[in-house]
Length: 328
Image (cartoon, rainbow, N blue to C red; front, top):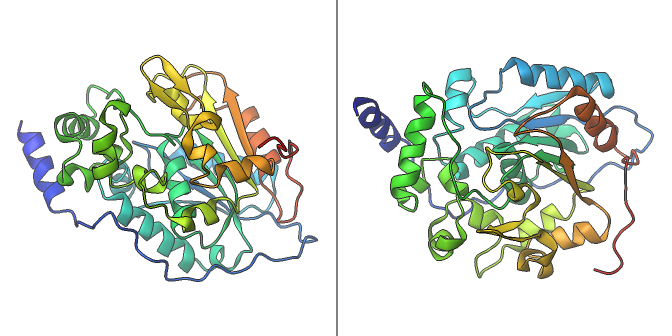
């Protein structure tokens, strides 16, 4: 009980911000026409819940990206330069503020900000956060976005916690007790992409993050659609045996209500093209991929294929390109 009381005190000290989106301070620069430059575009990576930017596994992934596309500059997104604080920020913080910070950090980076574009890789919740970055600021602009096990349509249950992971347990307790309170929605990260179809009205009214970046409210943000449909490639991977993300079909933007699954192309978000996903699909840029194993079961073979097919120099013809869908 003492641990939870201390946790609540710390959360109360976090800054508040309204769920309205802050305007970008930068103008997006046009992409270069230099197709002969064989230097790979920089790669930005946003890690998942409970991880931190200095983790050895992420360093190994960055090295693998450089092996596949020599010369790749990899930047691993961080909310805090202290690794422990960066991990805490995956559980606690205001996503509006966090994405604003990332927008400012990338726009101020001496190399990223001068590149014609960057490529992006999102692990678990980092995938929808990268999508939020693209929609809200997108400077430097993202060419190709790949997400693994991301919660694009939210979660209806919070993940299980390890026996000694008190950060996770504290977050879980708050999520279950007062999901839609302004206190939780401005401070608990997973609550800000919690989406239960049985609580849809509360979600639309109180969600601090997901309802906004998914353009689900009556007033649509055309900037979000305009930015997202500029992608040359958007690949969404789902893990076949994922038991961490509930429902796992959220990784493909599917709607799950009990045993009923409505896939993206049958949903209003696609049919009415609230986000530009239909436009991406029409030009052959939207890809749905499946990989074996549980949540974040990643092999070097799979990652090498992702790096080879989706990243590399600007102007490169991306691998595995499908023809646009004329029936859409």
